[in-house]
Amino acid sequence: MNLDKNFYVTFVRHGESLGNQENRFQGQADFPLTDKGREQARALASRWTSEGAAFDLCIASPLLRAKETAEIVVRALNVPLEIDPLWMEMDNGRLAGLREDEIDQDEPKFLTPYTRIGETGESRLEVYLRAGRGIQSILDRKPGRYLVVSHGGILNMALYSILNITPQAHHHGPRFWFRNTTFADFVYGGSCVLTVLIGHPVSSEQ
Image (cartoon, rainbow, N blue to C red; front, side, top):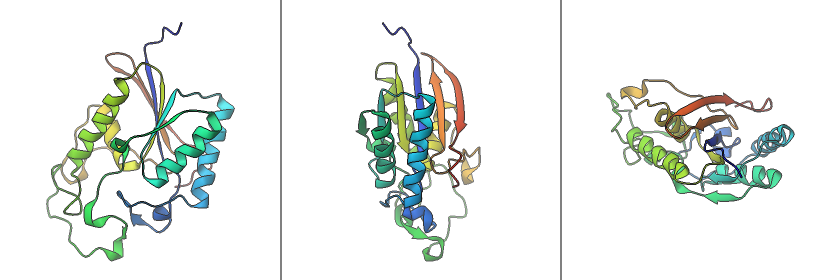
């Protein structure tokens, strides 16, 4: 009988997408992986296979770049996959899919955690709360090992939630730099976070 009551959760950002390659503000615009992104996902799966990593369930964003990354990993590790829209990237409204030189609106002079990104998107506070719901949905399950394949913006807010950091004006506060296929592990021990570790495969460059 498994008497371990801890939750072991690994957050990983998707591999390089076409939007990354073209330097676009992706948000919830749906870009596929590039060949490099697929190779990054395979490298991550290979690393975890060699380390004997095991997960009870993989939960992924439905956006192509995350879903495809997850599919590559779960095939290699023989892990069931569940799609959950709570782990979609921040909705950045009218900025979705645009390059910086295509943006024709000025950034607000004062950004608060309540300011909607791209006029019609989510605020950072809304993403923070959504990330918290995503984490709670995992903790409502039985203890085990969970893999979440998602996006840099919401994974930052997930770590804010775990570490009890609240979003601040003008994006002040720490930024956790999730490069493509960077991952973060945390262990939840019933009433507190026991550890947080961040790493990435050698082959991941951005």
